Image (tube, rainbow, N blue to C red; front, side, top):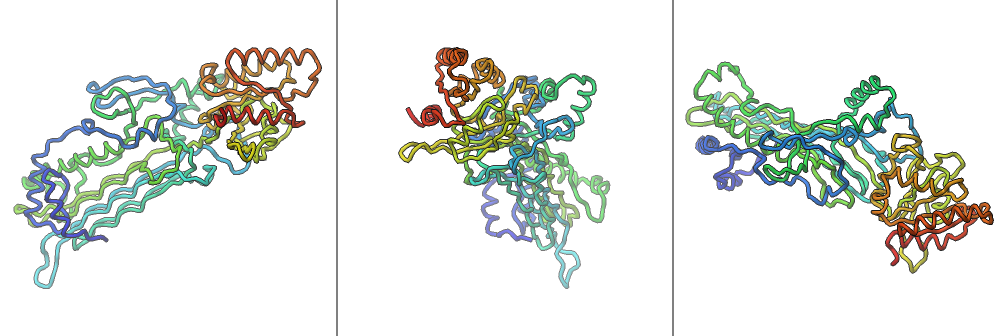
Length: 536
């Protein structure tokens, strides 16, 4: 139990407009002044406040389509609709996901249940000594519930060690002698730099919902179903009537203002029959409203997620713990000498979050299965990806660091599993690993010149990535691998010429190589460094 300094009462009283209770050891006069302020308090909506729970820079990441349904003042919040696909992970819909692969300990997606702690209850207690059996009230306040924090640190490259649930401790109840309950222990979640945290739906609810949809329409793909089904969310902007939704509003399962009383001896019906209690309860209701508005202000999460693309010096609060309840020492007044009641602690907040690791590599290596990406990465870097003839040899991203020479800057390359036609409809390995090249400054397309129509292969990759406009936002290098195979055949030269014309039309760089025979690798390294923005 913790006793707060009596000196702080001086500073507490100086805040004449404060709705918060006086510090420990309050006199009846202190409580009278506090209750009088509560009676004069005009409640205002928390939407009137400028709110910025998390820095704007911390969630400057890709957005997804939303449909705004209504705005304030028509509705209290900006109501928006968005596809369920934005608030879940296909990896967690195991019943419908055929692609269950395991390679090393690499995990890049986790759905985690988080819950902040409840505030401890205030207590009903009275001072006792040898001369009197019942003295002044001295019940302490409950401790605040623990909060849930997240922090990005270097040196971690996987989400494998994340637990499925993080539950902060509840605050303890207050005690006699005006002792406050201990605060609940906070929870700190440590993740790799490059992790994106997004609010998401309960995966069990999504799984049940999708199961019903797929039964009704067996021919539909999982991704299509998730994109067609939408949910409605209550969102807020930075200020009242801001039409631009920025945050998802979260809500606690807490008691309504005016509720949450704890009675000792006499029950609720007895107290509600007394005018002195009804007057007190009406004043304290303003205090409850202030707590409720404070919760609404803090219980928000960026609609498009929290991007931890840099190491965080200070932990970021995801969920704030509930406020501790008031002990009966705060209800001593000239009219109420023996208050046998206190307030319950406020509830914590529970929800699910998706943690997605998006690798921070300068270049993304993209190609059809068996195009030779892993062989290239093995030749030019310190990464040792698995190499073979099966189409999906690469089952998880490999990150390689390339150091061309002592006097030249190094850069990193991410090799993701091969993409096939209709990958956007979950064919092959799907597009789940594209997150690892979203941040890359340049994309390196690897195609096999030995294939029948390598230009068509390039078109397939571009289409599956979202089209030519999305690709043109990056620096692009096209690598024609296996150029040693049948290189004297005029058909091979004709195929390369078509690719050369296409790349020239888009102002893309091009290089033919043979990764297996280590041919043109020096030229490849120079062009990759340029694509990564390391060379002019």
